[in-house]
Image (cartoon, rainbow, N blue to C red; front, side, top):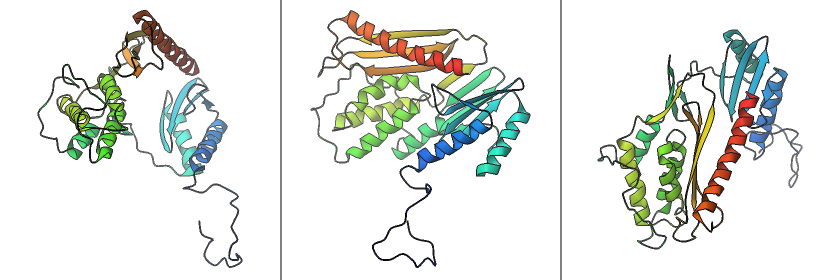
Length: 297
């Protein structure tokens, strides 16, 4: 930071004391979030105890939901009038840009019909394929080759390991709408510290699978079924190096998949039953959080 033009009182070796946050400082994002949250509470929004980026408002029989991602905001509700009032207030306080009906958000494409909403990342996948020079590549029937076994030692080290790390990071983000990638991305993530040629070859195979499934995504029907159901599974002692097991779960709201995860367990399970119980425990933890989130809504 430099003193404003024309300020000549500062002597060599002296520094200025900031009385407020400035854009670019390490604490700026937190200060912005505090300021926005404070303003939304003035507008009678309640901040969720389960997700601090979620705000809800019940006022005069109308219900609004507002979601914040840094300085990107989603707003929906039962009253167009109240929604417009909120947007007007936000614009007056911070100056905002209204992008209209939601169609694209943080790399996610939103397609709305009378029967529900479809989420996909077709453009994001296309960008990944273009960067890898694989727009015209052949397709693959599955994310990983049948019988694939990756090792931390087999194959030569990559000369540019950041290429692999960046690709795996992009696949992780793609998992927002692609639960079918959950296992393979978890598997590939184990080698980001020291990636080798076979690891990159496996990651590029995932891109071949994506080429053939560009239009896959998540469908959320407009059903009134709010029954929560969950499924868990475990692969006992699946890691050839640590003998740790793999946990996985999927949670549905009605027929809609709302949460899923594939993760290596933190400690070694001494039996398949113990591995299954650990997976069930992780699933139960997720269900408790989801229940709290739904109660906030």
